Length: 484
Image 1 (cartoon, rainbow, N blue to C red):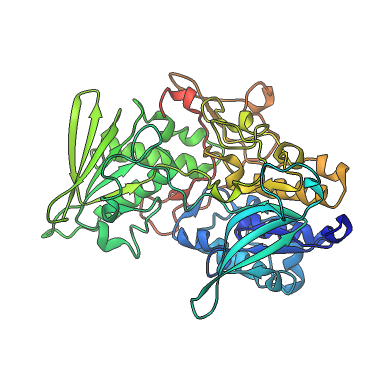
Image 2: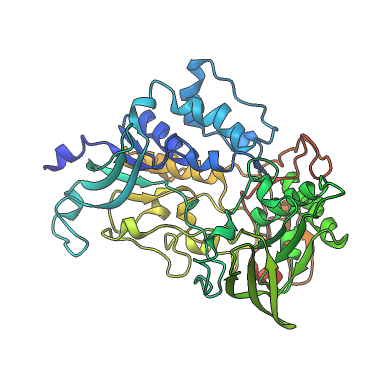
């Protein structure tokens, strides 16, 4: 295939989530042909999985500009800028209508799981003529009858926006599953279980262990507190235990009223209150060393080392909010430049490393920072952050805008980076959380972006309250609290 023929091929976008659909919209505006491959049965399948969870970021940060321009001729109206959507809201009011537009619908293939990306006719070891060869994207496609077949697509470029939702970090230490973790899988819930909804019976009146110190853990803990409020007087209580590896949870409690995302600040404040009141039993400095299901499979013992010695926690269910990592197996035959620790593009990694990066904001970045030695291949969205938990939707939208401009040959537009993000409002120090004056411009939190407004500040479990949300960025780095 000649170079000219390669340029007539589509740009394959892996994943039909918020960033993948935004990439398709941006490519169309640039006159490029996208082909979106989605593993799920519907667009935004991963978002649908956490549809019960409310975001911290209001609508003004959740909609891509090119996607909005694609939607407007259909009669779509932008949701209220200050409203805080749930995942279901994001799908129903934005992503599903976007995927259904005449422009995108015929370019999206659902039930199509990408299993490998390579260069047509070349493996990773071959260099001669590599950049002129089209990409080969191998897909396991599931048809209407549930049958699976392998389909190879050729592409002029590939944008991997597949996210990290299906790649949960293990419960064990050293990045490895704890002994017995596989056998204990029936006792392990996902990272964001619908505690008050479809998963209610699994948690109500049970002994629940939540593992993790991020916002996913916070969300689950507060939903469990609300669930415990409904325990019948004559039934077993819902008992909540929280285990973290670090010596402190101050980073998780966050900045309260000083947080530039009010819903995130409210989340931490409510969690602190629940712990201090004894409704949540907190264990710090916990390293899980084994999981031991009982002989009758009715309960599981979590064996852990702690500063006080070995502990045995007997529970009915474990909510594993341990974060995510990217799936790199399908990229094995590509030449990537990834940071060895973060598993993010090498030029991006220092900007987002949670070991040092202490705010939820990040400098605008695009095609140049996200490029790899494999010309024409980019990782965008949550997956581009590797193992860092600081991703924001608005960051992903700017990433794919720049990438689309680059692929269209508009170098100036690709380099003209604009990123409107909310102020985090707080930074961490080793001993305290302090307010940062953005006017000084001397901290990582300094930004000219206006602070978003929250809707609803009711008590935990109250209808319409904004206190339960999905992680859209941390305000504190690990080095700020001394914990991980």
